[in-house]
Length: 210
Ligand code: DGP
Image (tube, rainbow, N blue to C red; front, side):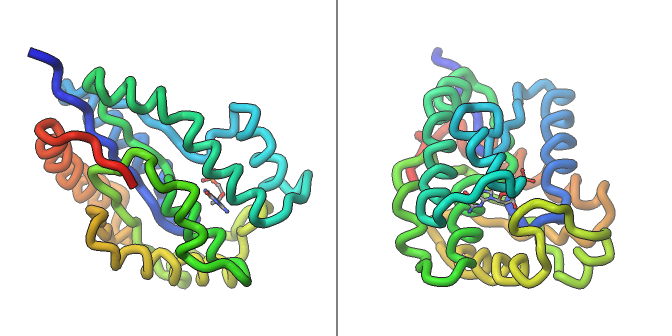
């Protein structure tokens, strides 16, 4: 019998919500329970396209807003063959940001509508589960100052949060909202239980497309 596919699990949220910590913990927990799992993150700053994105985020270069949107999307597309291969091998992928960040961050800029922003990512592998780590701007502020990168201002992050709220109304995506103001262990437990559920369901379903 062919091996059952892995699940595509995405963590989204505004900056400081704890996505990276929780992605690492989830991968560790899945591996310890004998389920093959690996972490990925977008943007993947290691590729040629990713290096252009990284320089832009670090404000070492300026790029036109439509152009950078398409580069972020291209960075996801270039990893699709690898993602599909791993999922087919039965590896669950835990992904730190995906197309939803792409749409939320660009559409938070003046002059961009959600619909235009979504188009370049149409056809990407569809996550079996997207968990949104919900954290109010006030709680995010308690976690310390934002960094120096582009987009790291509280005004912009507030707009991004509103865009995510619009995206979460899409019933064709399996969104789960996680209260990221809880302790790290409580958040981890919530995330793990949603993920185990998604892994069980995904193994009997074909991978979808955005
Ligand atoms: P990090 O997740 O910390 O590596 O930061 C990446 C930054 O880039 C963060 O501010 C969110 C933003 N971002 C992530 N994906 C996209 C995207 O597809 N488009 C745009 N415009 N911004 C993105």
